[in-house]
Length: 218
Image (cartoon, rainbow, N blue to C red; front, top):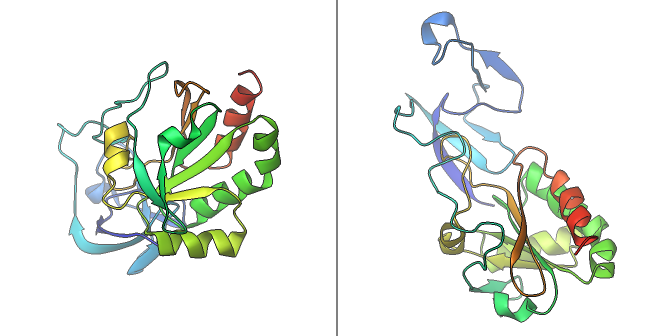
Protein backbone atom coordinates (compact mmCIF):
# COMPACT_ATOMS: atom_id res chain seq x y z
CA UNK A 1 0.00 0.00 0.00
CA UNK A 2 1.32 3.44 -0.89
CA UNK A 3 2.35 5.90 1.80
CA UNK A 4 2.95 9.62 1.84
CA UNK A 5 4.46 12.01 4.38
CA UNK A 6 2.30 15.06 4.87
CA UNK A 7 2.69 18.18 6.98
CA UNK A 8 0.48 18.15 10.07
CA UNK A 9 -2.83 19.99 9.68
CA UNK A 10 -2.41 20.24 5.88
CA UNK A 11 -5.54 18.28 4.91
CA UNK A 12 -9.09 17.78 6.11
CA UNK A 13 -10.10 14.25 7.05
CA UNK A 14 -13.14 12.03 7.04
CA UNK A 15 -11.85 10.54 10.28
CA UNK A 16 -12.91 11.85 13.75
CA UNK A 17 -11.82 15.47 13.82
CA UNK A 18 -11.01 18.34 16.09
CA UNK A 19 -11.27 22.04 15.30
CA UNK A 20 -8.50 24.60 15.03
CA UNK A 21 -8.72 27.46 17.51
CA UNK A 22 -9.40 30.90 15.99
CA UNK A 23 -5.75 31.93 16.30
CA UNK A 24 -4.72 28.90 14.22
CA UNK A 25 -7.49 29.18 11.63
CA UNK A 26 -6.22 29.03 8.03
CA UNK A 27 -9.40 30.48 6.58
CA UNK A 28 -12.36 32.51 7.74
CA UNK A 29 -14.05 29.33 8.99
CA UNK A 30 -12.76 26.54 11.19
CA UNK A 31 -11.02 23.70 9.37
CA UNK A 32 -11.29 20.10 10.64
CA UNK A 33 -7.96 18.34 11.03
CA UNK A 34 -6.71 14.81 11.52
CA UNK A 35 -6.59 13.64 15.12
CA UNK A 36 -3.19 13.78 16.82
CA UNK A 37 -1.85 10.33 15.98
CA UNK A 38 1.43 9.79 14.17
CA UNK A 39 -0.29 7.87 11.36
CA UNK A 40 -3.84 7.71 10.05
CA UNK A 41 -5.57 5.51 7.49
CA UNK A 42 -6.95 8.00 4.99
CA UNK A 43 -9.35 7.19 2.16
CA UNK A 44 -6.67 6.90 -0.47
CA UNK A 45 -3.37 6.65 1.38
CA UNK A 46 -1.72 5.62 4.60
CA UNK A 47 -0.50 9.02 5.73
CA UNK A 48 2.08 10.11 8.25
CA UNK A 49 2.74 13.73 9.06
CA UNK A 50 5.21 16.03 10.74
CA UNK A 51 4.63 18.84 13.19
CA UNK A 52 5.24 21.63 10.68
CA UNK A 53 2.22 23.44 9.29
CA UNK A 54 2.01 23.78 5.53
CA UNK A 55 -0.20 26.42 3.97
CA UNK A 56 -0.61 26.29 0.20
CA UNK A 57 0.39 29.55 -1.46
CA UNK A 58 -2.20 31.69 -3.18
CA UNK A 59 -0.71 30.57 -6.49
CA UNK A 60 -1.74 26.93 -5.86
CA UNK A 61 -4.14 25.85 -8.57
CA UNK A 62 -6.94 24.52 -6.36
CA UNK A 63 -7.95 21.73 -4.00
CA UNK A 64 -8.30 19.56 -7.11
CA UNK A 65 -4.54 19.59 -7.54
CA UNK A 66 -1.95 21.00 -9.85
CA UNK A 67 -2.26 18.50 -12.72
CA UNK A 68 -4.29 19.92 -15.57
CA UNK A 69 -6.59 17.66 -17.56
CA UNK A 70 -4.95 16.33 -20.70
CA UNK A 71 -7.60 13.78 -21.60
CA UNK A 72 -11.06 15.15 -22.31
CA UNK A 73 -14.37 13.74 -23.46
CA UNK A 74 -14.31 13.05 -27.19
CA UNK A 75 -10.54 12.53 -27.32
CA UNK A 76 -8.35 9.45 -27.64
CA UNK A 77 -6.13 9.16 -24.54
CA UNK A 78 -2.40 8.38 -24.69
CA UNK A 79 -1.62 4.71 -25.06
CA UNK A 80 0.31 2.82 -22.42
CA UNK A 81 1.83 -0.54 -21.58
CA UNK A 82 1.91 -1.53 -17.89
CA UNK A 83 2.39 -4.71 -15.90
CA UNK A 84 -0.69 -6.40 -14.48
CA UNK A 85 -1.03 -8.27 -11.17
CA UNK A 86 0.65 -11.29 -12.74
CA UNK A 87 3.62 -9.29 -14.03
CA UNK A 88 2.46 -9.48 -17.66
CA UNK A 89 2.58 -6.47 -19.97
CA UNK A 90 -0.85 -5.11 -20.89
CA UNK A 91 -1.39 -2.36 -23.46
CA UNK A 92 -4.42 -0.11 -23.76
CA UNK A 93 -4.67 -1.11 -27.42
CA UNK A 94 -5.52 -4.65 -26.27
CA UNK A 95 -9.03 -3.46 -25.41
CA UNK A 96 -9.81 -1.67 -28.67
CA UNK A 97 -12.97 -3.01 -30.27
CA UNK A 98 -14.91 -3.07 -27.00
CA UNK A 99 -15.77 -0.50 -24.33
CA UNK A 100 -13.28 -0.27 -21.48
CA UNK A 101 -13.55 1.33 -18.05
CA UNK A 102 -10.19 2.65 -16.86
CA UNK A 103 -10.24 3.78 -13.27
CA UNK A 104 -7.33 5.44 -11.48
CA UNK A 105 -7.30 5.02 -7.71
CA UNK A 106 -4.86 6.11 -4.97
CA UNK A 107 -3.66 2.83 -3.42
CA UNK A 108 -4.39 -0.83 -2.69
CA UNK A 109 -5.81 -1.80 0.69
CA UNK A 110 -7.08 1.64 1.69
CA UNK A 111 -10.73 1.98 2.77
CA UNK A 112 -12.06 3.95 -0.20
CA UNK A 113 -10.07 1.99 -2.77
CA UNK A 114 -11.19 -1.32 -1.30
CA UNK A 115 -14.84 -0.21 -1.39
CA UNK A 116 -14.47 0.86 -4.99
CA UNK A 117 -12.73 -2.32 -6.11
CA UNK A 118 -15.32 -4.51 -4.38
CA UNK A 119 -18.15 -2.49 -5.92
CA UNK A 120 -16.65 -3.08 -9.39
CA UNK A 121 -16.33 -6.77 -8.46
CA UNK A 122 -19.94 -7.02 -7.32
CA UNK A 123 -21.17 -5.41 -10.55
CA UNK A 124 -18.69 -7.17 -12.81
CA UNK A 125 -21.35 -9.32 -14.49
CA UNK A 126 -23.20 -6.14 -15.48
CA UNK A 127 -20.04 -4.80 -17.09
CA UNK A 128 -19.55 -8.09 -18.93
CA UNK A 129 -23.16 -7.98 -20.11
CA UNK A 130 -22.45 -4.51 -21.52
CA UNK A 131 -19.42 -5.98 -23.30
CA UNK A 132 -17.00 -3.83 -21.31
CA UNK A 133 -13.66 -4.52 -19.68
CA UNK A 134 -12.66 -3.03 -16.31
CA UNK A 135 -9.09 -1.93 -15.62
CA UNK A 136 -7.84 -0.41 -12.37
CA UNK A 137 -4.60 1.59 -12.22
CA UNK A 138 -2.56 2.78 -9.24
CA UNK A 139 1.08 3.33 -8.37
CA UNK A 140 1.34 0.06 -6.43
CA UNK A 141 3.67 -2.66 -7.73
CA UNK A 142 2.39 -5.91 -9.30
CA UNK A 143 2.90 -7.93 -6.12
CA UNK A 144 0.71 -5.51 -4.17
CA UNK A 145 -1.95 -5.75 -6.88
CA UNK A 146 -1.76 -9.55 -6.83
CA UNK A 147 -2.32 -9.70 -3.07
CA UNK A 148 -5.13 -7.11 -3.28
CA UNK A 149 -6.89 -8.97 -6.11
CA UNK A 150 -6.55 -12.32 -4.35
CA UNK A 151 -7.77 -11.05 -0.99
CA UNK A 152 -10.94 -9.51 -2.42
CA UNK A 153 -11.42 -11.93 -5.34
CA UNK A 154 -11.22 -9.18 -7.95
CA UNK A 155 -12.00 -10.60 -11.40
CA UNK A 156 -10.60 -7.70 -13.43
CA UNK A 157 -7.17 -6.38 -14.40
CA UNK A 158 -5.09 -4.19 -12.09
CA UNK A 159 -2.17 -2.33 -13.65
CA UNK A 160 0.93 -1.00 -11.95
CA UNK A 161 1.76 2.61 -12.80
CA UNK A 162 4.92 2.87 -10.71
CA UNK A 163 6.17 6.44 -10.94
CA UNK A 164 2.65 7.56 -11.90
CA UNK A 165 3.72 8.31 -15.47
CA UNK A 166 0.42 7.25 -17.03
CA UNK A 167 -1.49 9.21 -14.40
CA UNK A 168 0.53 12.28 -15.40
CA UNK A 169 0.14 11.60 -19.13
CA UNK A 170 -3.62 11.43 -18.74
CA UNK A 171 -3.68 14.50 -16.48
CA UNK A 172 -5.53 12.81 -13.62
CA UNK A 173 -6.03 15.60 -11.05
CA UNK A 174 -4.89 15.12 -7.49
CA UNK A 175 -6.94 16.14 -4.46
CA UNK A 176 -6.39 18.06 -1.25
CA UNK A 177 -3.73 20.51 -2.40
CA UNK A 178 -1.97 17.84 -4.42
CA UNK A 179 -1.34 15.53 -1.47
CA UNK A 180 -3.73 12.74 -2.50
CA UNK A 181 -3.66 10.93 -5.87
CA UNK A 182 -6.98 11.46 -7.62
CA UNK A 183 -9.76 8.91 -8.03
CA UNK A 184 -10.91 9.30 -11.61
CA UNK A 185 -12.73 6.97 -13.99
CA UNK A 186 -12.77 7.05 -17.78
CA UNK A 187 -15.11 5.16 -20.08
CA UNK A 188 -13.76 4.56 -23.58
CA UNK A 189 -16.00 3.33 -26.38
CA UNK A 190 -15.06 0.52 -28.76
CA UNK A 191 -13.07 3.00 -30.88
CA UNK A 192 -10.98 4.11 -27.91
CA UNK A 193 -12.67 7.51 -27.62
CA UNK A 194 -13.42 8.86 -24.15
CA UNK A 195 -17.17 9.11 -23.53
CA UNK A 196 -17.17 9.78 -19.78
CA UNK A 197 -14.81 11.21 -17.17
CA UNK A 198 -16.00 10.89 -13.59
CA UNK A 199 -14.12 12.19 -10.55
CA UNK A 200 -15.27 11.58 -6.98
CA UNK A 201 -12.64 10.94 -4.32
CA UNK A 202 -14.87 10.38 -1.31
CA UNK A 203 -17.80 8.46 -2.81
CA UNK A 204 -15.88 5.66 -4.54
CA UNK A 205 -18.88 3.44 -5.13
CA UNK A 206 -20.60 6.11 -7.25
CA UNK A 207 -18.02 5.48 -9.99
CA UNK A 208 -19.71 2.16 -10.69
CA UNK A 209 -23.20 3.66 -10.96
CA UNK A 210 -22.08 6.42 -13.31
CA UNK A 211 -20.12 4.14 -15.62
CA UNK A 212 -22.91 1.58 -15.88
CA UNK A 213 -25.42 4.31 -16.78
CA UNK A 214 -23.27 5.35 -19.70
CA UNK A 215 -22.40 1.83 -20.85
CA UNK A 216 -26.07 0.94 -21.09
CA UNK A 217 -26.45 3.73 -23.67
CA UNK A 218 -23.32 3.08 -25.77
